[in-house]
Image 1 (tube, rainbow, N blue to C red):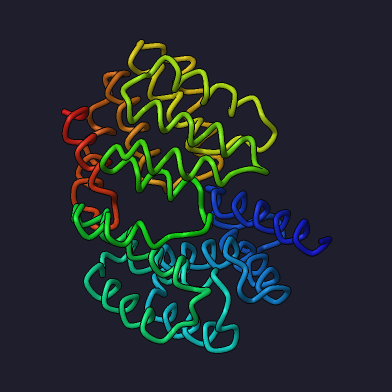
Image 2 (cartoon, rainbow, N blue to C red; image 1 turned 180 degrees about the vertical axis):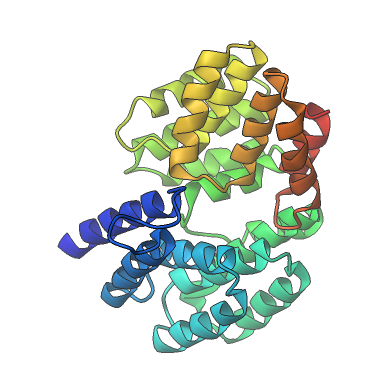
Length: 293
């Protein structure tokens, strides 16, 4: 639909604005003000759009307006009770702010009230929270109740928490109409099996596609880090950052890049942030402990 293309374009413009370093633009406006106006335009077209809500949550947290987030998201849920996007935004917000126990209770309560069509997304949100807490037993129990494909990369990462190859295989079989995501999940399967050669081949294939994703770029950057190839590491890392600059997994790769370049003063703050970030998956925290000095 035309408006979906418009929303994607406005969100890209908002992302570019939010990354500007100057305090004031040539027309006197602040970049973050323009970014917020673009995101709000998206939400006027589609109040429950998941990507727009994710960008809105990130902007509000970064500008110190977190207390206003839940009130608006709750209203959207009441207005559009069958939409997935607002629940994903609630999960992202509560993870960012480290309110994991509150978030778990919220989604457990929501499961008791929501329509069955929403159960998969609610279990996805719960599974993310259990992965953050390192509770593999609860993660496995919740994960099996995600019966539809909602966010292939996130769902794949949840299986990587305990290297569940069978779960990744079953996920890939559901991706019948998305070759890029299928290859991404196949790459994750190879990772889970410790087969980095095949993982690299799958992720390289993904990186060559028009709809390449941040996970493939970031994993390729990690692989080139292992070979101490600064040029290729930086190229793939910057491609990943352009798509998901705040993903903890990408921040970890950036810290490892700084470490490779003998810039410990830049790597150390990222490591400290990752180790204290409650909304970070347990696997990523363990990798930070293992790879960063």
